Image 1 (cartoon, one colour):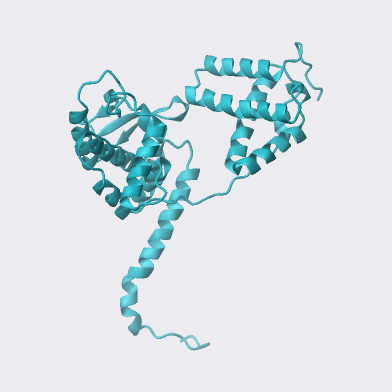
Image 2 (cartoon, rainbow, N blue to C red; image 1 turned 180 degrees about the horizontal axis):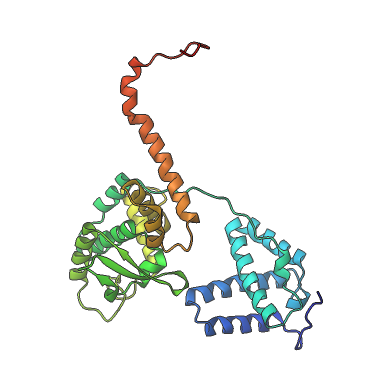
Length: 316
């Protein structure tokens, strides 16, 4: 098959990225997605400058050059960062290929970096209880209690929690309207304890010009960075190490399965597009079940009634 010719003068990386981001905005991609692409591609351009390759245009880029960049990202930060860089460059070159701004999509020759498949490490119910016991009183204590329970009871992502609006909360229905990744809306239920915590927090929050649910003591938007720090400080006071928002998401998933929830409804609650990640939570839950059964096996009460075999015996 003959390669398609470039229909216009070759573009620079700066121009290519500008056109790509403009197309992303026209497609109404979320601001976070556009920010992700912007930051990852900016890092790539900075690397080209550092390697004294600023004159390289997209149509001149080789697979070996991209691989060198991904290897540097893996060493500089982590395999996950290298994978993110690959995703951003793949999106850029997919766009350029469709626009016929490059002869061929170089990213088709670049393998996606592999990342370790880590088993999620959730908090225990005791650890969550200790954190709730240290929330304190007043507005900040009420806000922290509501934050913790919303995250442990629904498994929302940090960005989803910060984006919640007061109008997204239905206390009557015990549900939250959540705008997830890819601008996909879903309805997530919560329990009675979370409702009680939200009622107390909303009573203390009062009227505010800020439409977001969670606010600062001055009524301003509570940012993801602030939520991260608030949860980390709470864990420190409770003697719980490694507390962060995504770990609370893991905690929700495992406790949900342990308490009788199924994988399909968990997938919907978490906003996962496939069952792949949900299966990992199921594997952790199954391992916990095996360990719990080993400690409390009813059958082992009757071990004295079972005689171990001592060798080969004839069937009778």
